[in-house]
Length: 493
Image (cartoon, rainbow, N blue to C red; front, side, top):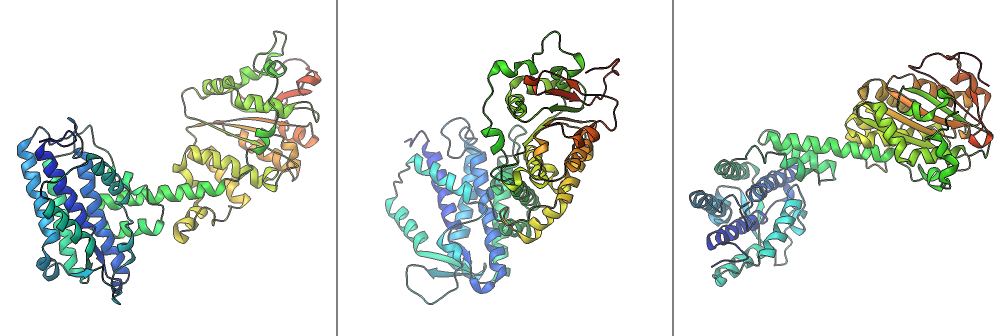
């Protein structure tokens, strides 16, 4: 007989495995054990997670050749004996009470006994995601057992009773036995080189509670070091995510989005200059060559922001700066100042938050090094991203400096910043900030503003270059800081 494409032997093995999983779910810790109860529940949960991992790795519920046991009858029989041992271990009432520190509780009867933990009302833990996936696949098989009476009795038992841990020392012996059987199952069907991965990280990444990850780390530190390491990695990833999300603010990209899309012919000259265009003003050449600063400057209403939006979204811009990156990893970050917008849209804090958010979202691995104080706050306080304090301007400036100079020195970073004249503070402050950023050899910056004296003074204070005067419809004039270009000869007006 076959069921849903599975042979009789495979059906029996799947049913046996499902019984074991159900028996795992019957055990919980007593509340009066205090914090130890959570540790014991977590230890059991980790073993169930590993048990479910094994079934998925070998394709136990698969109907094709990916089921590792489908063509190996000898191994399947040995696996069956191990699963029978697991089932016996978790279902022998006297042994569970005498040897493993468990107490049988009828959960269907009203009682004043408050020994059960909350985990009996709804399962949560490291195995929950994989457990839900297993149940969905199992139900899809529509397995019908021939031993209806035995199956019904077993199902009633698993719903009616719970095993409550009352002796932590004895219960640890049960964990040791379950660990032994999990190891035996994995040894019977070793992990091949091709399928080698980090399944524990895949399970633990679904946990969004730092306290729960701490429990996994603590519960497995001495017994399951690989799980403890995976939980530590998952915790770091969760903290990274919270820190990065805390930098985000809703209006950070509103200004760019609300700028009217340009008519193609009015701005195509920027990336496709005419033949009589002065070579040193050629934006296209600059984008794909040396690092440094390119300044788009013009009077109010001359179309600077329209041009900047066009450059931001045009595929050719990204193609050109990838040429500049020359095979190195490229990071693109932008900000559009807006004097009439929210405080974050016109402040240095908003600029820094936006740039850091985009960089760290691209590569969150440097979050801890870039923002160590914020990281520690998230780590020790276990605050969500909504509760974390926004870093100070000094902290974010230092973070951006560290990212450009050291943490991402092997990457090429392109900044596009529009409307620096709409910054609510002093022009000289934002100009100096731009100057500092462009001093890093792996950084290229495209900025736009009205021709305020402070920008002229600061941007050209270290250079003999002079701005190139263009037609008013082309943002009045463009000027560029060189790096790696030959010096100019003659006056350019």
